[in-house]
Image 1 (cartoon, rainbow, N blue to C red):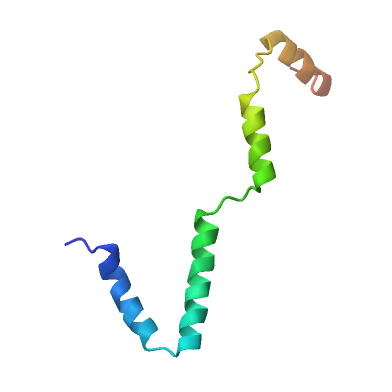
Image 2: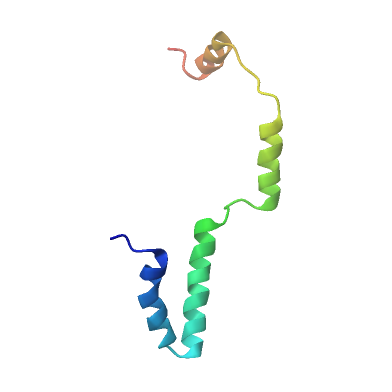
Length: 78
């Protein structure tokens, strides 16, 4: 039998209800912080806008021999 999220949270909710109001608030704030960390983006709005701008730029293909020439400057064995 698969337990739903509500079934899994019920024992936690019961334990939380038994705590004083201040402790409940602290636990809920901590849980919300963890949820925000797991679901929030690590990028700021400005960073996200920059990524979107760069992704919208046309793609440029560089010929294989040009890439090898660049790499040879750093490793002549290539």
